[in-house]
Amino acid sequence: MSFKCEVCGKGALVGNNISHANNKSKKRSLPNLQSVRANVNGSIKRVRVCMRCLKAGKVMKAA
Image (cartoon, rainbow, N blue to C red; front, side, top):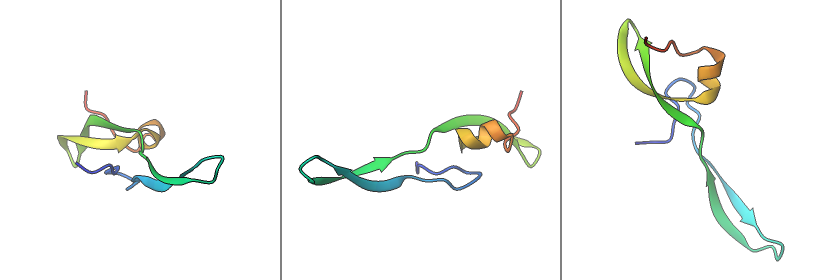
C-alpha cells in the first residue's frame, strides 16, 4: 500500500533531520491519507485520499 493520494498524487516527502551539531539523518513526512468510500464513475469504491482533497470537495463521499 503506497502513501499516495489517488486524486492529486500527493506522496511522501524525504528530507533530513539536522541536529544542533549538524548531524543529519533521513526523515519521511507522510501525507494525511484517509480511506474513504466514494462515488467513482457511478460506482462506490474505497479510495485513499489526502485531507486537502476531501476538504476541497474533489471527492464525492458515498452515503
